[in-house]
Image 1 (tube, rainbow, N blue to C red):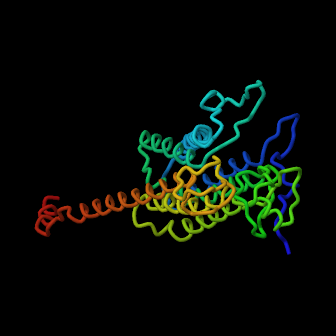
Image 2 (cartoon, rainbow, N blue to C red):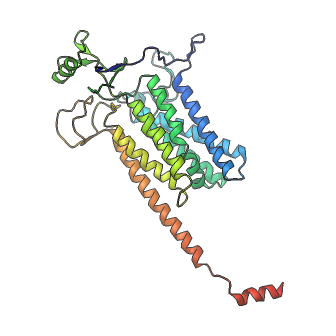
Image 3 (cartoon, rainbow, N blue to C red):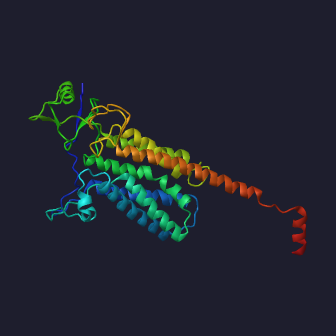
Length: 336
């Protein structure tokens, strides 16, 4: 019986090596995701017969992508990096040069920061150009989960953002995972159970392939719901945006129980037990990502409530608007 899976060695982060330049699959997946979101947005514009200039859409997407990249980078380096390097050397946030003068690359993006950055940039541009941000936002968000799924595939190819230790038969040994001290009781017990030998005093244990979990639940499943079930049945503008924020927050909050936290500690610890970050021992110790997911859920619920009240108010005003009486209509016709 299969106890665990080895990460496929034939998967390499780089697509090709061109004279030392190594474009990666993760970057390519980002590009594919952006293009796919644009195509699905344009499809909805055409289906609804909306008269929108192509350049206006392209510019809106451009500034949204810029905001996404800036926000994702800022959150990843300033909030989710435990080393404190970027607080001490802030120029390295956007300049890919390490302390030795070599090219370090811009490794590290954060989803929450990307969302915040994209929203800020797109809302500002929409207000300047007088775009109906709720209508456009609904069309964009209906496409976002499918685009996001490509980023998770990029994470898997990079063998990064894997999960906590597991004894499930689909647990996967990732080459970049931190080796654990075999002298710890729980480590030796799991290693013995799975018949995994140690190298020296360290052992690499199987992890949850949370990139695949995220690819399906955050990407494919959420997209199917938004695109095929809710997209054409929304009761008011902004409904799809609010549902996405709530749904993603819930899914991500749950998945983060299985995902290895980026910071090796629990931000909120309600159960005072010795809980190594590699293990899920209680549902009442929460990571920083789960806090942001909870804030997303609350934000989405408040957004839906406010937009619902706004739509009811506007509908009520429309119904209360004075209707012309037959006498007034006859008088108007006689004058004409």
